[in-house]
Length: 156
Image (cartoon, rainbow, N blue to C red; front, side, top):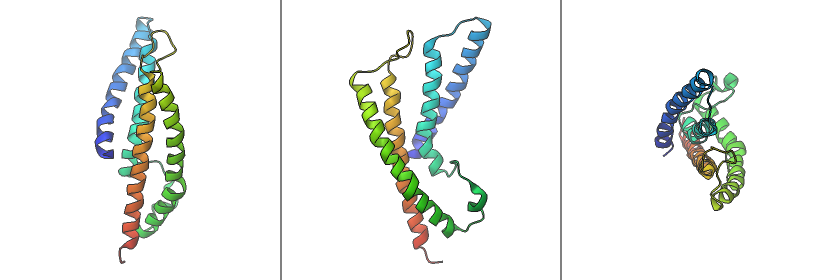
């Protein structure tokens, strides 16, 4: 699921580049801008970050300090990943999921839109994506945890 969502959302980066180029050209050459364009840029960037996080974790492309990690063997890396996932990733995802679910539910309940005139009408969708992205990251963290257990369970 993480791979499919990650690849699908990667197309948002192309759309984001095209919209940003249009926005810059319209702003500097036509002296025009619109609230919905700026909000769409923010929302697309947010989708890339939120929905691409689980894919980055799955592909081991997430940010990490590799000073020591790159010199470790497979089992040592599995221990680091296991404890990092148990202590940091899963608890923080759980807390953020709880908080963002309440936040998104309140937004969906009123079908929240942009407070700016001319802004996007469905802000609740991006707040829902927050819950979806954190859920994907949480489940990818569980998959990572299971992979570590399998590595540690192998005989050397």
